[in-house]
Amino acid sequence: MAAEEKQMQKFDVEKAASLMKELRNNYNSRKTKSYEWRMSQIQSIANMIEEKEEEIIEAIHKDLSKPPFETFISEISMTKSSCKLALKELKYWMKPEKAKTSLTTYPSSAEIISEPLGVVLVISTWNYPFLLSLDPVIGAIAAGNAVVLKPSEIAPATSSLLAKLLEDYVDNSAVRVVEGAVAETSALLEQKWDKILYTGSPRVGRIVMAAAAKHLTPVILELGGKSPAVVDSTINLQVTTRRIIAGKWMANNGQACIGVDYIITTKDFAPKLIDSLRNELKEFFGKNPMESKDLSRIVNPFHFARLASLLDEDKVSDKIVYGGQRDEKQLKIAPTILLDVPDDSTIMKEEIFGPLLPIVTVSIVSSAHFKLKACF
Image (cartoon, rainbow, N blue to C red):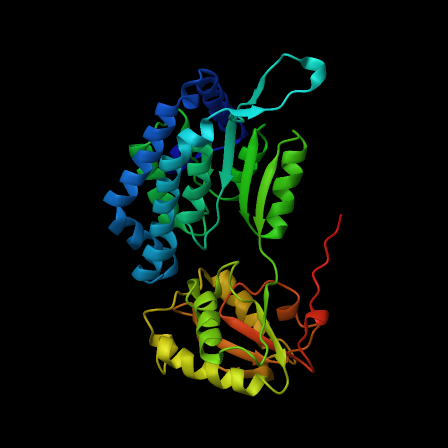
């Protein structure tokens, strides 16, 4: 009986189409366009964050073992800031902008009016499951749209909490949460949205973009990639090292698109940089980082195995100069530094998205070696 009930509740293409029809009708009623509605919904989200802070911290800790202070800074505080900005600037954002007219239309006048697109789909990610779910939702509401949020199933506690809280705090006739995995996301992508916002991997980004292209739906894709830090010998070594650590391991233990993916420095300077990283890492996380409460764990067994395979690859495992400890049962990997791994190794081809930091040495660091080319 329970299996039949679960089957009945399954979110498929038919239910996705029904949801879209309902939201489209509610959007067409023009209720989401009013200044008052937008302000009330954003204020409700701000109230929700204030009143449910402990529950949010607890859910994110269940998903990632993210330290409470890190959660407050990188998830709660930043989402509050988005609400605060929207509440402060919304009237200005909605204000018509005067536009010049040509001599041929004299004596006409013109203005640019910002209009909502309609019904928006937000597909969120797991590494910052609260911030990266609500931040685009706040923007979509501020613009006067109806919204469907699909949180990441890889952060199930946060996904469940978002579904519960948004049902309680916002207008469900225009803002909905759909939980689930690939099947539910696929059902949603079958629909004709007016905009899709996706945060995640390039692989899934291609799927999202292909689905959107069928309906000529505009998309915003925030995808991962390789992000090196170039370190030369003229910098303040301690300040630089602390900033690298803060942006790498203090940011969800490397599971962040803003984390340093690898370092480029000179052969002569590399030993000094490695020594500084060793010393500062001990200051941040103690002599045994595996016992530190200031490090997030790896999100799930799949990503743990992925990171372990990067370390275990031939001609990579012997390049570890610091760290390398791991605990599969607790899904923990210590901050790990590698020196001069082969260019053709997987760790140098794919986004690492974890606590592993290769250092690549070159003979000289100069601006001529790192020119940015724009393609038009």
